[in-house]
Amino acid sequence: MRKIEKIILCFDNSDLSLQASDVTLAIARIFDAEVVGIHGYNAFMHEGAFRIMEPILPEKYQREEVLQRQRKLHNSLINVGMEKISLSYLKPLEKTFKESGVTFTPLVKEGKNYKAVVELISETDGDLVIIGASGFNQNGDGFLGSVCLRVLRSCDRDFLVVKGSTNLSRSRIVVGLDGSASAVEALRKARLFAERLDAELHLVYIFDSKLHRDIFQRLKDSVINNEGFSFNSKEQERLHDQFIDRGLSQVGRMILDRAEQEVFGNQPGLHLEWGPVSDKDNRIAAKKVLEGAVYKKICEYASEVGADMIFVGRTGRHYIEGMDIGATAENVLRYSPCSVFISRHQKYEGWNI
Image (cartoon, rainbow, N blue to C red; front, side, top):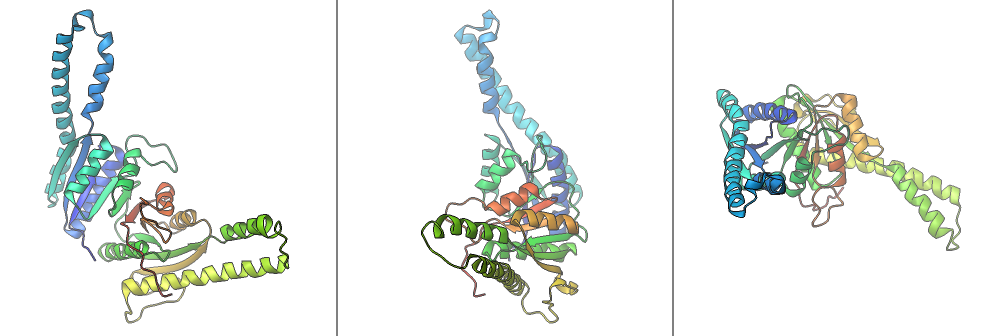
C-alpha cells in the first residue's frame, strides 16, 4: 500500500482552505510527510477586463500608441502583482508548517484557476491532494465549488475534500463498499488512517430495493402486459421482492466480508458477526448492510454515528472507460456531513463471492 509521503494542499485563502490547511498540517505531522502548497491565479482575466474598459478612458488615452503603452504597463503590473499576492497567501503557511517541523514548498502558477491547479498537481505528483469543498462562495447543502469539482474530475488521485473542521483524534470513519476495486482501495486507505489516528471504522454496504421494484413494475406494465404475457402477478411480485430484499442483503454481507478479509487478512480473533464489532485491534467498530438510496444512506449513517470522515472509491462497479467520477462518490461529496476521502480509480478484476 502506497504511503503518504507528499501532500498537495490547494489553497486560496478562503475559510475552507484555511481549515484544509489545519487538516493538512495534522496529517503531515502524523505521517511525517512533506507538503506542497499550490495556488493558481488568472492574470489574463484582468487583462481582458482592462481591454473592456478602454472605450471609457479619457480621450487623451484613446490614441493607439498610448493604449499600447498602457496595456503593456498594466499587463506587467498585473502579472507581477498577482504572483506576489498568490505567494503572500502561502507565506504564512510556510512559516507555520516549518515551525511545526513540516517541510513546506509554495508553488503558484498563472492560468485559469482550476487548470493551473490541475497542472501543478500533475507536476508535483503527490500522494494525497487536500482541497476545500468550495472557495469563497458557499451556497448550502449540495453545493460544490467549481474549482473543487473541476479539479476532482480532471485528476485521478487520492483526494481529501474538506467540508469543515475535521477531527483527527480518535475519529470515526465510515467506508462505503460496493464490491469494486476502488472501494477496496478506499478501505485500505481508511485502515492506514485508522491505525495512525486511533480511529474506528464503520463498513457499510447499501442496496436500493425500491429501485429494483420500480424497474420490475415498469417492466410488467409496459412490456409484459402489453405484449400479452400472462402470469400470477401478485405471486411473482412477492417472490421478486423476497429475492431482491434477501438476495441483495446477502450480497452485501459477502462484499463486506470479502473486503474485510482482503484488507485485514485472516487475523487471529477477527470478528465477523454483524452490527457492533468489539475487536479494536482491527479498528472495525461495525459492519452494516443498509437499504435505501446509496449516497443518501451513506450520508445519513455518517450523521447518525457522528463520523469525522467518509471514505469512498472514485468509481464503482459500473465504471466504463472515460468516466471521470462515479455518481455515488460525487453525491456523497455533495451531501456528506463531514469531510470526504475519495480514493483513485482501480481497475475492477471481479470477485469470486
